[in-house]
Length: 110
Image (cartoon, rainbow, N blue to C red):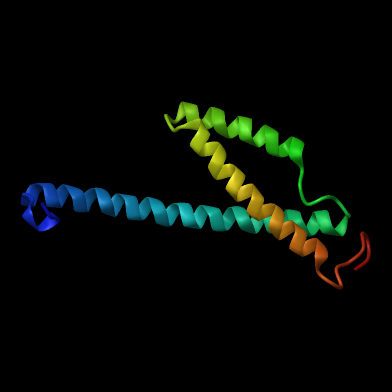
């Protein structure tokens, strides 16, 4: 059976749900973009003050916080943790790149 063979009311419901999914996906992308704007600022601040790109204690707290949020939202906490780990790995990579850039300022030097 293909989508052409299904009842029109089922097709309409599929389209409605898929449009909602598409809207949610767009919102997720925009939220991630905003998150990365903030983490870029954190990366510059860390680099300026010679702080390490990673903060394992904060990351552990964030994982626990996100797992609790996922549970209350009826989302698999293991999935939420994997997602956060993926995002944090990318953030750390960005922070390392920022710290390695030539010509970055020393603390207090403008």
